[in-house]
Image (cartoon, rainbow, N blue to C red; front, side, top):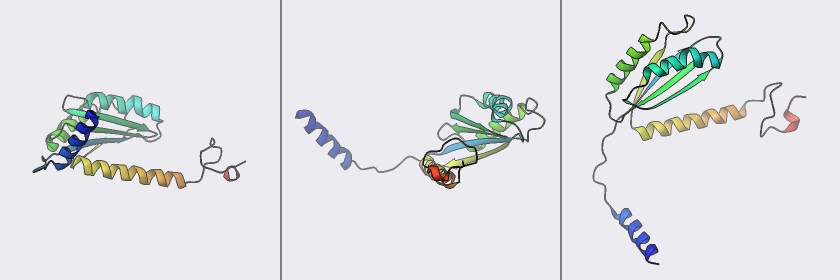
Length: 159
């Protein structure tokens, strides 16, 4: 009973707290996109994504993620909070340039872009983009010869 009383008083106190000023935060995400036409995802991962990711990784990066698909490598580096976005792009650009001779000659030059802003707004925008992509992918008809897909009636599947 005492625990419940403490919990209720604590929740009420949190709700009554007044926030006078939010801190200004700046979050930077640097994206490195490289095309390697005609290469499988395994080749892209082995010859493009892995060398670039190893070169880019350093202590000022908060989180590093990558995605290798057929003919395309995408690396996202989330910088530490309030890190200078221009310095982030310059450092990653230098690291990528140092690895250009390691990449296959058939691969296109890596494209480096950055986004800076409020982390919450950008994450909400990214979530909405992924939702729209998922809805668009769900509406596509199943490919001929593909394995069973959930949600597709048996009458719509090719024989």
